[in-house]
Image (tube, rainbow, N blue to C red):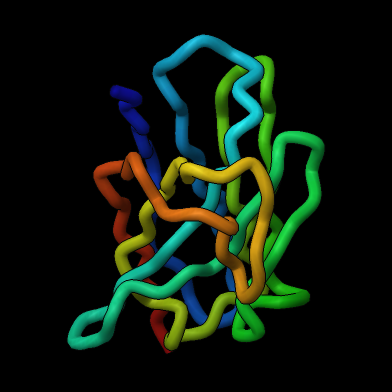
Length: 126
């Protein structure tokens, strides 16, 4: 069992920036693929971005060029830098650890999310 802890989140105005983090409570330097998902009210959960151990990434089209996913393998920490935020980015954001080691398409890892963070709310006001 891996616990993923998500501090932070917050509210910003249209065009603002936020940085999310996610700390995995397990031994460091895991090679597993990790990613971020979001779920807006009334919508299905969707993949946002994914990253392999060595840094190869995948993004959803809706966030390309605005969001940057990264990870610190020694500290078991996953990040999501969100710039040029829009009201439509408002959602609950979840980090996840996958069953695969590689990224897929459209912001997904190639396997299935096995462990989830508790979620953190991001609100972008117009």
